[in-house]
Length: 448
Ligand code: IFM
Image 1 (cartoon, rainbow, N blue to C red):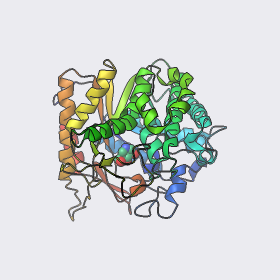
Image 2: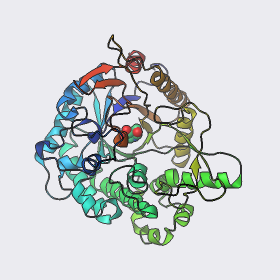
Image 3: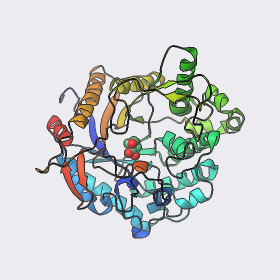
């Protein structure tokens, strides 16, 4: 045991391709929906984009050395579909595959285990032009790309995740339009949920092999009702349905939640897709949980004043409520107990299934001092409190197998651009210098 964790517990840090790599036009990479979105005026808060980001495409070896130096033994990164299959379908792009081979081999040289995510939101633009995740064909193209990638790299990468946070892809991408491709399609966002999960199921069926482990990274969250009133409890049921049950139930029980389909008027459409459910519900080796915060919701009386595109089709009158908890720079309330609650919820649905915290972290407005340090005490507190939750669970015999900090290095935070920093390592975007923050140093001391 080290600090209350068993020797086999996996400690890692995570990143995602578009957020760190840059080099968007190099070695045959095609455009993704995030290239298009980030270059559309008004979409990104600070007007930046991922063209250069952390230049991880060129600096990955330095970043992996840094990760290893922090005492971390696992690196969760994502593979950019448009580097492997630039227009989303057709032949593989050899330089793209070669890049991820170099990346994985560098991990192994440093004693770091690679954990690859096949889809962290960078859909090839050509597939979006053909309908994106609202059409079934995208799921099949995803399976083809995943099979190429796994076929080439499964000798060096043993741990695979199909999708990262399909809730975001569906409801931010096709619901309120906050993320690429920026579409506002109401309840049709649920079709995106289904095609994403179908892509997951088709992929598992195509790539699962001896000696590997295969899972998915979700972002479930505890949903609290603001009061005990029937309206607020119903609001919590609806949001829990869209955020959690719409993913966990098909994956773990082979059925979509009937109440969510009724709330959104999608019962008939989903009825026609039932044949896909056995694929979606194929056994998983693990679930990855990306946890940041809970949500508290209420359903005020009367019509809301600002109706508009929503992440909650069918429940647009439901609002998030401030319960007075301290918040990060994202405005997300801090509730470490929520990590326990959501892991326990999943464990009840699948008692033996190994779980990982595949992301956990916080954004704060970091300042680089004249001495060249970053004293990120608030992030350090957040990290310590969530690690403590993991330690308690593990000591109770709970099947939690690892913890990945989000994120290794500050990076492009989607529609917030570079205005939000989540790293345990600071990045000076003008020089690409990496500076370990106090939180990163604490983790290093904790692990040594
Ligand atoms: O930066 C993101 C990551 O890409 C997915 N999970 C949440 C993080 C913080 O918003």
